[in-house]
Length: 280
Image 1 (cartoon, rainbow, N blue to C red):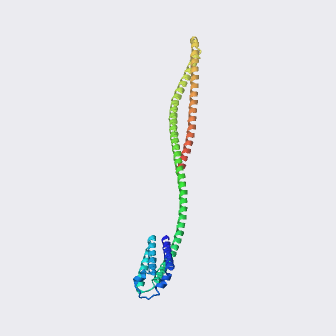
Image 2 (image 1 turned 180 degrees about the vertical axis):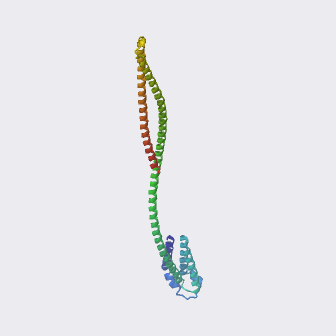
Image 3 (image 1 turned 120 degrees about the horizontal axis):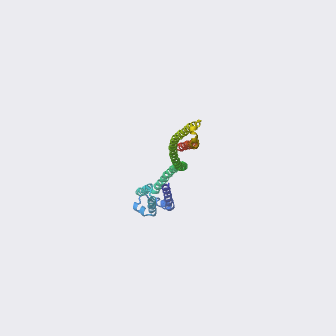
């Protein structure tokens, strides 16, 4: 990690500082008798270098916000003071402390690197799965949008079909009512026409038979009888023609009604099947 790298860099810098600045002083300082005073050692060049190395580590610990570097600086200071009191070479302990810390941090860095590698692998796999799921979600969202759009279209089409079915039913109901009324009128008028025609025919028969008798007493009335019979024959013809036209009109109306009713039934069945299909 970044902090681990900074610690290693700091330790390497401190180690280099000690090697570059303390080597000769170390040999000079610890070649004297071990009974010299501690204060004299601290104020010597070697002593100052020792504490400068500890200060360097402490400053780096503050910049890197490293607890381990801060602890190392404290141990270095303690080692310098203890070695000064005992007349020992403090740099042996300092170098040992730094070397131990370097080895510890390098080991931890290797472990962190291994963990990071594992995490990177897991993260890469997770990102790949996430990308796959994202693509899948996008496809599903597109399908949902299409289905929603199609659903809206189907609802509009079904509404139009149901409206048409309602209008068709209303129109058929109107046709049924009109056909019923026409049939009733025809039935009544036909009966009246047939009755009238029958009456005219009966009257013609009676008058024809009456005037056909060879009774000279009625000779003077032959002209009048001819006029009456002629008039009745005209009436009979009109009634016959009217009855025929009435029947033809009824048959035509009935045929038209049947044709339109069948067409409406087919259209109704088609639209109902369409509605059933679209509501699945």
